[in-house]
Image (cartoon, rainbow, N blue to C red; front, side, top):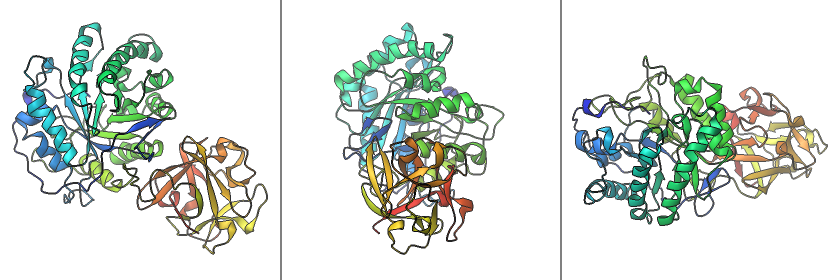
Length: 496
């Protein structure tokens, strides 16, 4: 993100919050397929906030750990939620030439590491939160800066190789966008990223590594199509309100997220004349949040400040709230997901999926059960909701089909929950059908809150299992519909 001039920032005292975030362990994370997992293979989604350049925050704005206290204060009642539940903090480190009052230099006698970065990382660990060390370049990757980047990671990687809560973001925003095509731009960036990744892996075999992508980290689709060689890699996407209006940008994100882990390290909005950042909760913030939930994408919002844009705070460090401001919205979004897809299986239902077994499946909106109409067992039987009575037409067995995908098999019929004719349109019938292994018969699960899940067919990842018209009546049809995060699109799984 384009930064506000550091020299224009004024000193401001930070209010010290007294609360601490509820514990969330920070074990080593790894990637598999297009998701991030903890050591017990619970899908993990990290959600949090980015600071400004940590040197500027430390010298001019009251200190980094004080800001972390603010971002993890469970007793902060601003906005519409009772506390702040940040699970990951992004820590930008500006290059020397960017004007920060305190930044890393190869000949600083370990001053930056010993007296700023290491204490901040340790403080994050004490709060049970992850942190991203972000080398915050905003320029083309060229031979002219590649050496400095390699020098930075050669220094940092061995020093944080044993810190399970540390994630490395190699290069914030490669501007590179003048090589004729997304693939050509990525080909330039990829060569440098592979070199730096190899440097990091030489010293630090386990830390997650985030890879910036061309065009200010927006051309993530090309990177997904030709990924780096290596493991525990996620690809960076930045998406602001102007990007949200462009189908190209959203297609880059969704196409990438279908095949590789994506980490959105910047998003945000405010009411402004800047078309890049001008947005609202209804027009950008909530639809984006729904999309990130749907694809299981980790994120950090930009930015926890009052003059860097878009700002989460006012100049007195109160949250900016309202339909066109992001401060309260970020806090409320973190609170709503505070127990969703956390390491150790946080998410109410035991992790990223309900697991193998036989369940009754109840609508969050109505409390009624997923039911095969009329106790039917024939191909084409309509799925409805009905008051739970314990019948086998209301009992469903989840069978793991690999890669986080499950079939949902009716106990009475032995047949699969199926989206009619492989269709993707809103209102498409959900029915019973003999299992044939099609993607319209395989489902993924995203924990929401309170032990509920969104249930998404593999062939239509923008859609989910939905009760028609948000009805609470017996007999209401169950159908396919675009995910909007509503209660008639969320389901619990429990012993029948």
